[in-house]
Amino acid sequence: MSNLRIKHPTKNLTGNITLPASKSICNRVLILKKVLGIHTSIENIATADDSVVMQHALQQTTGTVDVKNAGTCMRFLTAYYATTPDVDVVLYGSERMHNRPIGALVDALTTLGADIDYINKPGFAPLRIKGKKLHGGVVTVDASISSQFVSALMLVAPNLKNGLSIRLGKNTVSKPYITLTADLLKQFGVDVTVQDDVVIKPYQTQTAPDTFLIEPDWSAATFWYQLLALAKAGNITLNYLKPNSAQGDAIIAEYMERFGVSSNYHQQGVSLTKNDNYLEKAYYDMLNYPDMVPAMAVLMCALDIPCTFVNVAHLEAKESKRLTALCTELGKCGFDISHNGNELYINSIGEENLVKPTAFNTYQDHRLAMALAPLALLFDEVVINDSEVVEKSYPHFWDDLRMVGFEIKVEA
Image (cartoon, rainbow, N blue to C red; front, side, top):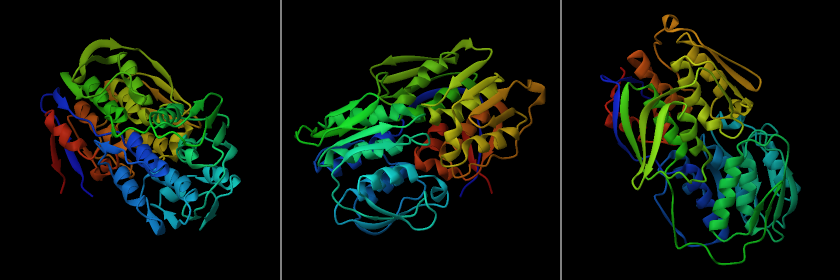
């Protein structure tokens, strides 16, 4: 793995950026295409590791399937394999993946009659799955750790004889991703209703589109808003982004109006410009937007703005223990950041108490690497260890930074 030394000589960011395709949308569409048995051509398919893993896994029906550190693949494939006759696989991943809970999804599937066994520790991968035709019905899902448990069931529901009614447990997180899944199901002709429960009827009408274009990733856009907020000046255009996206993280445009970045939508995409709006303190409920927390937390520290993020406990079950990792790495800079259960706290420290870090660790977490890199605009330069982790969602992130003037060198 490479360690990168990153700096920007002028701290003025100007350029046009084409973000990666949304892996969240791509992986859902890849599953749907198999479940519905349709021939829709997918355009702008994501090149992120997670989507490459998904494409390979969907070609397997026997043997061992390695999803590496891809959470969507682990959750979505568990449901797909369990509901596909003649499948006999062992589904496993990285060491970290084997410590991320999957019991709530397995419980829901076994309630419906699925044949799934834990190989090692109950509630966690690896899993032995023997697929068969399931009838569907009514199931309750605890989605307080991940909404992907719900989305996984939604994606296979059209293939169930009786459809599926999903009753959501308390404290469901990341609900915009459930809405996104429902929106995609509708676009492919599936009858779905999302209210207190999610109700999906069996697939009958052949109304799937001939082609489907994967839109750019709004979660990736978060880091460009963060970068411009920390720059001295600049104008960044994010090509092809649209304001009416079903992706929940599109809310970053609204959030960042309060922290120095304006969004101007036009035919080419959205242009980000600096403004003079800065809150003196902030409070955010991140129950539905966990992927934005790393960039937002780093930004609040760098701007020295006191902030409290609530409903963030589920971040400890991500690619890393994200809250713990953020506190550890930002603590190297002298920032006053801590977490306690379901809250993350940032207090003002004053510029005189800043400490230039030697290097940041990334904990095999792509979002940590991308969130910490913009601190090069605060400390003149930073070192990011194990930089390849960005390939999980944004393979050309470092190249895009070079396009707007960052100097990036591999550390010996």
